[in-house]
Image (cartoon, rainbow, N blue to C red):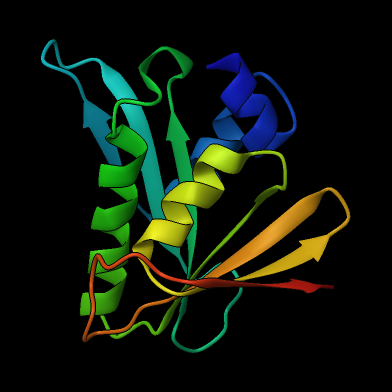
Length: 141
């Protein structure tokens, strides 16, 4: 999980203040395995404070990646946001974090905005086509 934490948070430890901030400003779900051990975390919330825009945070334990956990959690988050009237889901990640970018591209039509080594991905939450793979556009910011 240390590699994922480094990609998402810029460090290898998840601090108490990070968890407090997530729980205060977002809605979170934890994915558990058959032994009820946590394998993933997804959060949505109005981090950008833009009307109709919900921001996504996604974390999957390194040992459990490439098993569909991140995709399932991200779809749940997108469906929840869509059901609550959001029109856009955004995520900010390192451009090299291609696994997360692929997950986001599968949620709907996307627009990628590069910011140096990072990319902000905007997913259109089209009510008429939930779960359909999207096309994406790349922009520089």
